Amino acid sequence: MSIEKSSVTLQAAATNAAAATTTGSAVDLTGALGLSGTARITNGATGPTVGCTFSIEVSGDGTTWRPWCSLTAGTTASTSYDFQWSLPAEILYARAVFAGNTGQDVTVECLGHKLADA
Image 1 (spheres, rainbow, N blue to C red):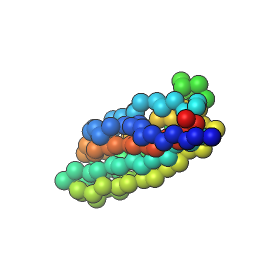
Image 2: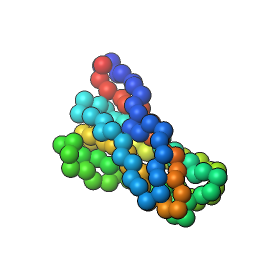
Image 3: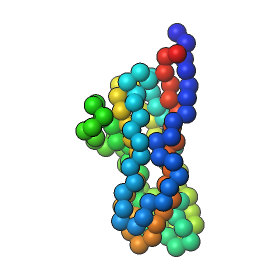
Image 4: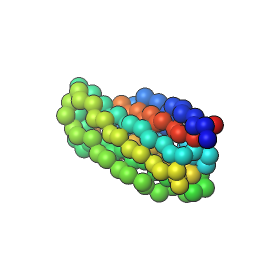
């Protein structure tokens, strides 16, 4: 069996405005053996009142989404918070969601590494 590794962008670097939600592109994992990655939330010169929450959501059909894991960044100004996550082969679709920060915008990003049969 030959294995193929590839990088996947679930959410390119973007601004998540205060009280807004940024939802990344869905990733089709129907032929994958798993997906793992990192998310980064970066606060600006003034930190948010409430930190931004990063979630990986999963789906069996690409339309109905449920949270797999959720992690919340701190509120310290000019600080980046990195989160690691991993999904098993059973997951069919995944996406990244960022929400919950209040008071200030934050920068968000989520990158993954997919493992599949070649």
